[in-house]
Length: 593
Image 1 (cartoon, rainbow, N blue to C red):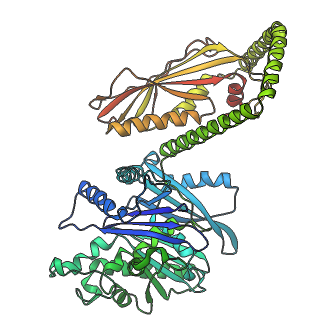
Image 2: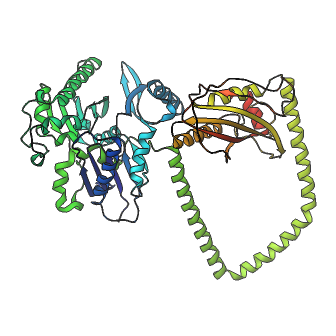
Image 3: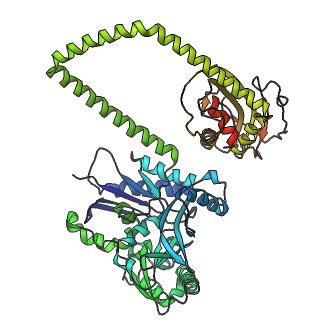
């Protein structure tokens, strides 16, 4: 069977899965949906347990397999934010910095607690100027891991995690309504949050989240009804007779009016006359009639994300999927991967690294098998040539043994040259009166995150080596050949946090930031003999101790650096060993990173 993509949408009111075989006419292989129903407001743990059970029921609809591959998942919640911004044209490498500043400015929590990504959409023209449209998505790190842990229960490691807005954009970009010449809106009503788009002429003009969803609306239909008689779905009679009896839906209609008015003011009088509805909200009886009542002069339709899909593989189930189609808008869009798909992935970097290691191990194993196969064929069909090659090898080995003394002598000369360059670099540094360690300490202080402090920094000369090669960056002043001096920094300190898992993640992120510093070449977290301690908050006193300027620069430097420590309930000591290498190290100091 051809390779397929599985989309998983875990919401607070249902879990949906769909399996699609990509192609010119994508083939829907299977789908499944399981609703979550609670008699009263559930706790977060109860929601996770219910989602796990619902996912088990939903994936049972898929064909059996040994393991899940090519899985994409949606993460939902009020801590997932999507923003559409327009920037003046700029090089791609500068966009990342601008995006990070925007996320940091808009974040309600430390940026270390967020995972964010972005995608370039298309060039748009605003007020006579060409601008680059960018979609930025951020999510709370704990929320993303909660989604991953539910999937791991079934042995699923997703290849990508994205927000509902990404799936909706993908579904819209391949539908006929995307190229409409008039302004069109779409409201996707999720379990606890709704996402709205205004678009036209293959351009997304406006996007926002409304913090009201299906879970808030369904109570108006349940009051006075026997639970056994509840039957949600488009066009089913029963329940309220006016939108005024559904306060949550009326709030959504009010926010839609405000958004339409804002769009009209920003885009020179364009008026939204058509609204498509998708998501869990279509389970509510006569929701299209209620929205038409709340939004005068706006045509209400249900969005069909199945346009252009092949449903022959479903057989008799195709009719059921056509009925449920609006609920699958985000899930289908993320699994389809059309050419204009918003490529945003909120998968944590540490999990991406695990996947990369697994792929690399598979590739290496394949290479080993291929090499062994080639050697076997060579041995079977070219035995005579192999014997000749062995004789030639012995001859060349003898020649090497004769030349070995001269090569050893040449290597000694290269070592002397490298040591001379090391000393000349040091002399130039001291002559220019540029103290080195304050620069390192200043840089290190910027890398320490909240709830961490560094107690000791030791820098020692641990050995010599000559590489005889150019530095990778090659932009600094001084000789082009790396110095043979090898320097090492030992960083000792403490980290605090409310949980042991978050504590380990905080230390790991600090190690990652050290490797990105212009001063440190490599960073290794040393095994700690001290266990995690549960401690009370205690005051910390700042102090600084270091070698005198120009004296004992290469013996030992000791300092204590603080970063607004807010002590948590757990404390862990860490030791990190970093490498600082020769001329490349000096060049980085001169260029200040």
